[in-house]
Length: 330
Image 1 (cartoon, rainbow, N blue to C red):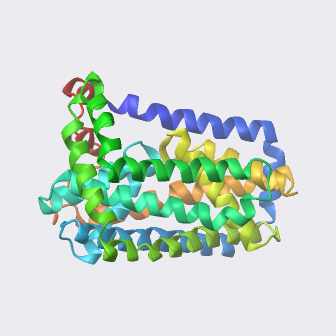
Image 2: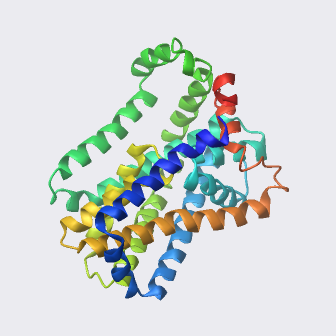
């Protein structure tokens, strides 16, 4: 997969954001941005850094439970470095798993399992936290059911051999993913180990802190735009935007995330221009903050931990996951 093909999703996402701004009318967005309290925007940026730092702490505990031995600061810095790729290219989470594997010599599947379990718990807690607010909007019950049902289905596939076996057999006959089947087995085995360890799951309370930080950053942006709304709206916007971005399969959820933010805020009576301005500021936080902080983190550790190139890491991650050689080289 060459750089040009990896950039296609990013270009699609940026085009979507541009299209949203054109529909809303850039003049409305500019008018809304004029009164922005930049001090609160700066505070939201700091909260965003804290969000990714806490994510690294939680990931460190899961890595340790999976037998991947890194120091706490190393896990946090690798996690930040991986966000640089996540913000602009697909496979960012595979990148941080790859870096952890490169730094320790541990199996790639073990590090990837830590990422998988972390994202399952965070998504579940985020949607559960937003459930009271979700029940108050049209289709909210459907979002809750689909997301939590998807998480439950994933857990059943991982934990119940009778369900996993036919899916594993299907993977073995699909040419595109056949060579990744062994890594899928490793991922599943290591995920089961983590999901059945009380210590590993108890640390999931840290993901509640991430939910609070994510909602706190958005609420600061709302206040910066002089939008006085309650805490639950911030949690709701974060949850819907996160799910929408994840389902889009675009890097960082770009495009789908902004559309979700604008749609929910407009639904709660926020003027269109202000809603679009909040979505734009959030995109700057979601892309700009992890990109800058991640580059600094990568510069600090890549030589000492012998990490691969950030540019080549998505390709290497595909290779580590067992993707066919032709796909990796394409």
